[in-house]
Image 1 (cartoon, one colour):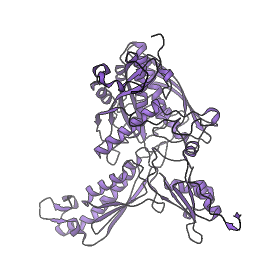
Image 2 (tube, helix red, strand yellow):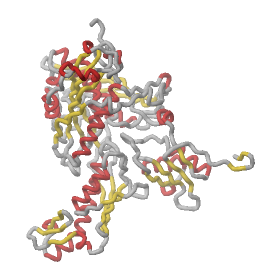
Image 3 (cartoon, one colour):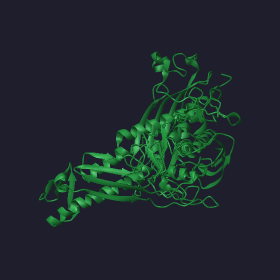
Image 4 (cartoon, helix red, strand yellow):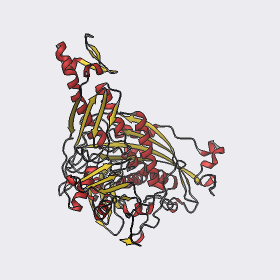
Length: 585
């Protein structure tokens, strides 16, 4: 359109993603996007625009900041469409309100449970009905539903189970992948049932859990045998035996720590302390037959190693891990990780710890192939096998000390490179009876929550969360601890503050005022009391996903502690003040 005889500037809607048309070239559409899975985004965009895969290129920009697989097409489709229609570069930025309205959220879930147990608290049967609100499209709800029904009984041995699940389209905003999809919702439900069962039978809540915990060799309700390490009893015992924090009356000068903070209207006499437990489990990698594969290339030249892999760094630490792998395998200090785009082979989405497992495995294999290329000439020259040579601190030495040289000297100006793939063992879809080996691996967590509750005002303060987690193998201690603490803090928000209300299909408060995120003042003391390192033999490094399972477990543990403090059932998350108020006191 023209105004006053002058051509308008291209329409711009604010965003960090860019689209543009390059006519006369093989690539017709370039999209610069903060994506977690550029190849899937490219495939979807090409299908929607009627283009071939070669005509669309996605370049990953910056850190996506996604806590899970950002599978929704809120940016790339309108961005690419505007660029194609206008023939001009287009920039698109979502406002906070547009982000709330357009991006996928966690599935709201309605759950009904009935637990059966004997007088000693041993579970006999679990019946459950699970209803997921898939929102308008239900694009990714099948995987969330599969996780929900598979983990409906939790990390407990249940001889008999009858589980029904549905994901239904509604007029609510779209639901999608968020950390612990499906597993978080059912964890809150089955842990509430364990608390109620313990109260009914007069058994300590921790003890009744210990009597039923899952272990390696047990069978899930879907018929799959747990073959990975499952030290659930060890995790629960660790948090149960950890010393409890001091009571507020022991430190009267800390009255500002009461629920509501220093400006709160509560009275110390109305505060009750509660201790609760949560046991959670999540799956790693894709499920139900998903083809998990990643490709990586490692190049070495002039003493510098470069890693090419389409694994997007979303904060999970993949670039650090890739550097560590190459440095340890090749003895090279300077390692660069190349930017990600769709010219590289696919590596899949950055969620469920898959890049640590699959992409890290591909980098390791490629680095070992380059190591072989580096050592073979030396081994041949000295008449020994490459297994008798080792690389330490940039030096290559033989077992007998005859050979001693640096990696740079051994390279002699050559360029070495290798490409490798990593593909875990296949899974299968659940059959009509809900049976099948649907998961590659599982991760477990136990959390003990200590809360203070003002039973008159209903305000809740999380005092401490003690965490014990099954991590497989610790690759980066500092990073692992930070990710566990971040996951636990996210769970605090799910338990207490993050309430997305959608009356008549409309989000009531599409902002961070009505949807409150936990701040540093809301974060409790987080004590990582135990990390169980039992290496999973099918994982390239034995490592497990560490971020999702604390998110799954901490809301259930906090709700359990509020139940212990108030005696109220607490059947809904987030916990609203009215759910914690005790009348008749």
